[in-house]
Amino acid sequence: MPTDPSTRPAGSTRASVPARPQLLTYPDSLGGDLAAVNRLLDGPLAGLFRGVHVLPPFPSTGDRGFAPVTYERIEPAFGTWRDIEAIAEHHDVLLDVMVNHISRRSEQFADFERNGRRSQWADLFITVDKVWPAGVAPPDDLARIALRKPDSPLSPITITATGAVEQVWTSFGTSEWAEQIDLDVNTPATRALITGWLRMLAAHRVRLVRLDAVGYVTKRAGTNCFMVEPEIWHFLDWITDVADGLGLVLLPEVHDRYDTHRRLSARGYWTYDFVLPGLVLDALHRADASALTAHLDGSPSRQFTTLDCHDGIPVRPDLDGVLEPARLVDLTERSVARGGNVNRLLSTTAPGELDVHQINCSYYSALDHDDDRYLAARAIQLFARGVPQIYYVGLLAGSNDEDAVRRSGDGRSVNRHDFSVDEVLTALDRPVVRRLLDLVRLRNTHPAFDGDATFGHSGSRLNVVWTNGTSSCTLDVDLASGRIDVGTH
Image (cartoon, rainbow, N blue to C red):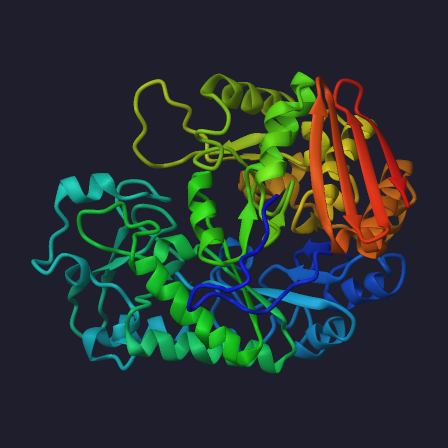
């Protein structure tokens, strides 16, 4: 039975997080703004969630908040810092810091674009010569890089003052344009900037910070420039020391093979269980509890669990080595047949390999709107170790929003429906949602979840027992029928 090490490695976070449910939402997706979110938390959602992860509420120029212009203020359409502080009165607030990049329209990059290397902010950014001193990226090196955009990680920038063209690192975007400009996290200028961001978040009563896209911060010639060791540990140790001094808990966000998460856990860091969503779908489809039980039994307690989120259901590389390729193909095809779509890896894949990074699909739609199977999936998440994050669309058992995809042109919008207050209240009255809220409330309040769990299976049945002193809470799931039985003592 895994336990957290009593002594953390140097640089790992020492702060604890209650193993209680968190709500994951955009600032404007539950009624239009942060004030509406807070009214729901104090009203019909009262007593359900210990924490709230608000996806980036800052002024941004792309990627629905993930291209921040500044962290100094909240986007006025969403509210103000007072709204964040109001939520923090009764909940642990989690916000994102995009440690890998900043908006192309930020004050800092705009100055670099005007003045080039004479800019006071020039050291924030990664010009091609920082990685390849000759100023040219060799084709063999480019071929190794874990890309999230076609062709090259570099984008050409014309400097206004001189007309010179600088090649700067941009992990995301297109081959010719990127709204998100990568930061050089090794320079004093960038570290001072990040420290200022963290200090400001702590001052506004933020409790947890997710390090978005942190795996991409390591760039070294001759590597894939993703989670490069030992550089990634040096950075995580540094930023965790800063966060510890401010009373912040850090959550590194990394999509990679599960071994990477084991290494994060071994060093005392919080991590995500991005394997769970696909394993649950696979287990319910095959009525086979064996792989899921083994995974749950080996999972750490210092993790956050999800089934769905603002991006998609992870496939590759998260499930590589966990599910065989044929089962990944089956998982993808079934979800697409139910109205989903896919994000591609955009990295070099061998002929015949499945080139799917994530499946964009609401979890309720992925389970074909079957209430029993959907509640079984949520029960498994809520009885897993760690901190369960419940995405707002999943909380309301939302279906795929194909109109949003057509309007935005972004496949991820299928699972990003913006609910009006009336839509929220209507959804909360549906039987499947009421039953889900009962499960969330149980996880948030029952003392057994302050203990630890044991996991077992027999054929298609999964059994979980949480025990804390004389308190216990049990879950029995029949994966063949989707029926669940919950017991408390």
